[in-house]
Length: 169
Image (cartoon, rainbow, N blue to C red):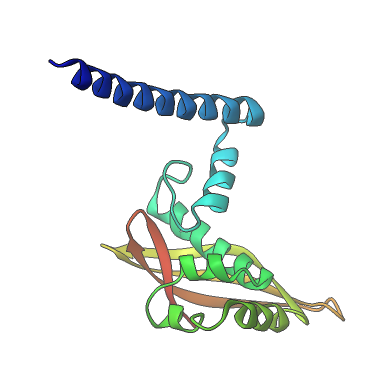
């Protein structure tokens, strides 16, 4: 092997080693900084950085579907268009295809008089990559405090590693 080839190979190995060391250091710093390896911390990190995708905290399809529906409704109330788009599919997703500021404002405006909370996600039925689930929602009128209970059915599809909402009624 020539001297130039050895230097080139050595440079490549040095760069790869430096990158690997940086990644390992970053992981160690993140672990030290959080010091919370619990399932709740993992779920929170997934929700923040990978909405709609669940790698370990939620293990069953039922848990993943429940989490997806709750995240979708929370994101809609907050006007979080990016998360809503990530968690939606099909024709349902097309409803959120416009300019992000206007869609976010419209979502927030829709929830100014009423706030929703999901009391339960029930009757989860999974058939391959398709699923249906009923969300028991409690709507609270912000001005009067009056509460109403309703059931909304969600239609979901599995895409990649997560579930997405394709319809609700």
